[in-house]
Image 1: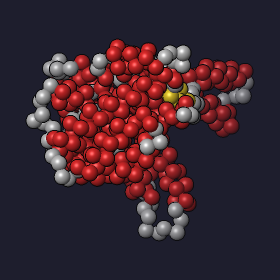
Image 2: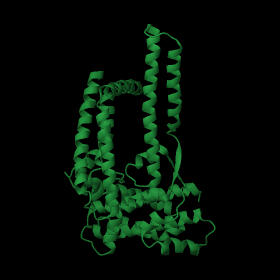
Image 3: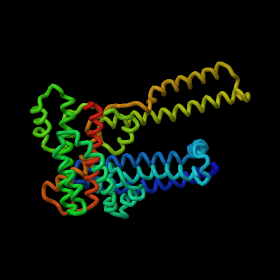
Image 4: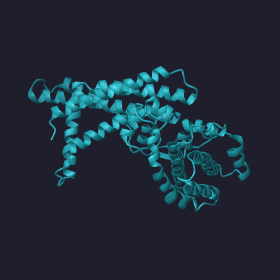
Amino acid sequence: MFTQAEIIKKRKKHLKELKEIANVFFKENKEIKGHHQHNWEAQVIENNIKQLKRIILNANKQLGDAELRAYATSSAAQFDQLRKIVTGEADFDIEVYMTDMVNGIERFEIHTYSPSFSIVHDLFWIPDGTIGEQHSIATGKVSPDIYEKYCPLRLEIIEKEVIPYLKKKSNYSTHLKLLNEVINSFGKSSFLFLNIVLITLAESLVRELCKFVYSKQNPGKSENEINEYIYDKFNSLETLITKADWKKDIPVKIMEAYSNSKFIIDPTLDEIALRVEGHKTAEDDIKKEVQKMSKIIEDVIVGKKQNDESVSELTRSHLTRMKELSKSIINKEEFINVSIRYRLQFLLRRYKEDRNSIIHGNYFEFDKGWKCYIYLSAITKTYEVIKEYDEIYKK
């Protein structure tokens, strides 16, 4: 069982390591700023710098004596609570497990802001891989070729979930044929062939999904009007996702939206981030007001202060301040609505550049297994959005 001193020592070591890694990636992003080719890269670099600044400043704050003691007290209480849950597992070291988990999560976020992870390979949305693998890619120790091993998992999901689901929908019949071709050809055909098929198949699936969503959002429009809007007005997938008139019809928890605001660049999420940051500041300030009130009450109890009108006035002022701060407190279970753009953000960055390269005949980078994994993941991710919208509109 860790003592408070041991918890503080481990926390200090971890925070210093986080700062060191964050500073390395901060420097890398600053060095490439202004040398990008595409607008989305400039946006990601600016976001990386902003998020890494936040992490460094927060680490400095958390290294304060009061913050470290508060962390140790909170962690000890959590360890005791969790130990009761896992009683009977004598070999299970809950302190080590929880410490490793928290440290791993914090490390993972930092790695997503490295130029290698967020721009060169743009892996913020991928569903598989260990923290160690992502760290190795972020620091340039290994190439993303390691993700080729996850292709069979994505193929299994397509075969056992995606295809059976889409079979129920006549508008996806052509896509089903191609999906079956991909499954049958994997391991027999080159990755170049599979990748060309997959990247075009993903766009076709997304356009069919967008057609469905737009028709539900605009029930008064004819099929010809809908087809013209989806297929003719927006020739590129990027403009369809970003410029079309999409209603905010996807309910997501505000904390999920806040978490994704660190990676997804969207005006709606910027507003959410401001709200949550205000909530966190208010929480901290309320705790300070409570501590001040507790000190006043303690002083009265031990006789350092008289319980007179001045004490009552101080107490009232702290209560008034807390009441004002509470206006910024949000319900973490609150839902907010976002548009389809939120769910399809992964198609607007490196994936879009890959698609453009293939369309223009630049094939030399695409005979790779890890690219196949990326495009298979795009299929399964699009399938998840199809299911989500089916539930929203109860088709």
